[in-house]
Length: 117
Image (cartoon, rainbow, N blue to C red):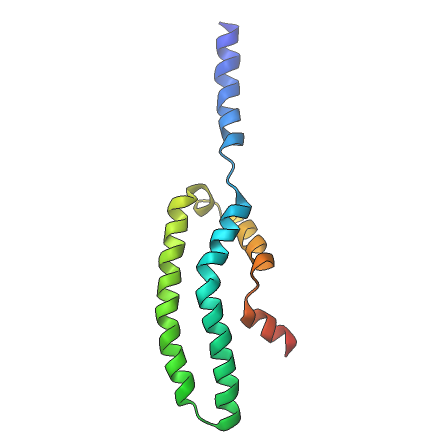
């Protein structure tokens, strides 16, 4: 009976350790989701700077329209991540940890640009 109690007590704790999500893999998946939007952000920033210098804002408006499509695609990608990593989607702390890792692996070009200004 004692062995049964030890086994019943020990196994759930082992499953918690074994079920720990791979935060680095999740961060890589986040970077994959952000690759296209970050490229669009970089392009939009270049267009904005050119439009600002020339006074032509129509190019910027066109780029913003294209960005909305990319943003929607990245939202769908993130929805897939909540299915792939349900334990992370349920924990705000784990989400912050994943985003910290992702920020190191694939920094946001807009954040880098605003730091330089």
